[in-house]
Image (cartoon, rainbow, N blue to C red):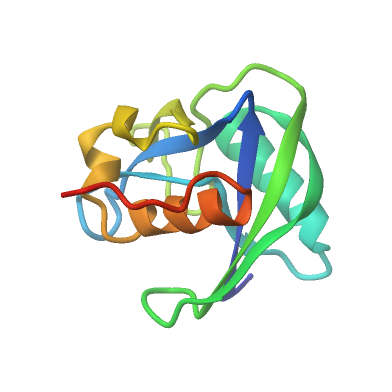
Length: 153
């Protein structure tokens, strides 16, 4: 699996984006919200990667609509992040798994949640204080045509 690029799904419905509440038990021990996604398997297309990641992590079938963001991200496991707009074609969102790190006794994804792209003041404190997810959601809002205004902190 290539870890140079993180492929992430912005699953959007009714002006809300779906995030996963993740407990990083394998590395940092921290809990945070993140877009579904991960690395692409050998010979897998970007679209197939997005569909697989969404299915594994949210139990949703999605259609990949378009690339929204293509950013350099020189920290952590990935050097680049590609975010795709996706729409649900089947299923109800619920916590899935991270096959690379989860075990029968220990799950990474504890919850799924819808976050209002029109009103960031409704986002929970884990997102508002996250140095990675919060700026990403602001860039996502701008790219999708929502207000680019930052929240006063």
